[in-house]
Each structure stands twice: as structure tokens, then as C-alpha cells.
Image 1 (tube, rainbow, N blue to C red):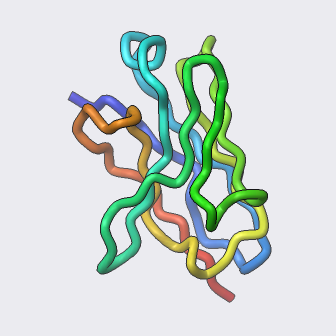
Image 2 (image 1 turned 60 degrees about the horizontal axis):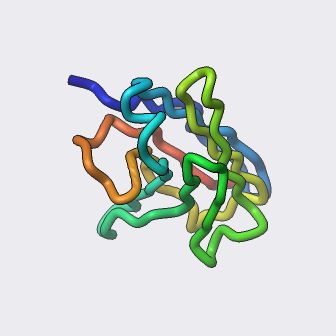
Image 3 (image 1 turned 45 degrees about the vertical axis):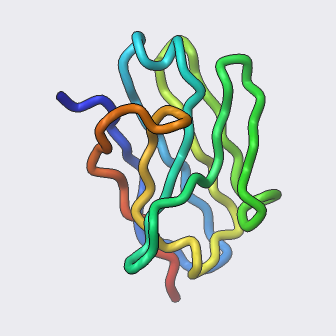
Length: 114
């Protein structure tokens, strides 16, 4: 059963922007903190940003000031606005609860390259 549907990735030049979206079920969204994770080739999956049910956010240092996580409670959707993208942001981006409790979705590929 697909728990998370990620979208919005693509190819962008350094300095560009993308907005990722993740839709999930009401039963998950209403209970847990939600997070965006990413996995680059050869690397472990890492938590990029997360947001609590109350809207408190936290980011890993490498994306602070560039990425913004938000959630739409009416749509059961969490977003990741990514600005000033760098080549090192290239990865597959996934969403899940924090900590991750469910199977991973397919993710959405983000490629930052000139």
C-alpha cells in the first residue's frame, strides 16, 4: 500500500528553485511529525527537514536558509520549497514520518546541474 506520493522534482541549474510535494493519508498526517529525507548515490538516506503537527520546523545545517518545509492540514500534504539549489543537493527526495515508520515511496529525483 502506497503511503506517500512525492512529486515536483526535476533538473535545475545551480541557484535555481524547486517545490516538492508529498501527499499522504489523513490517518498518518494528523498524528505524526512529517519529514523530507534524501538519498544521494552511494550515500545513506538522511533527514533534510521536518515539521511537527504544530508547525515547528527543523533543518539540517546544510539546507538552513535555503529550504522551507510546510504542511497543508486540509490537503494532508507536506511541501519542501528549495531555493539556491546546489549540485550537492542532487538526490532522490522522499517523505515519511519522523522517525520513519512506514515503507518508503518512490521518491522524486532532484538533479542540480549546469
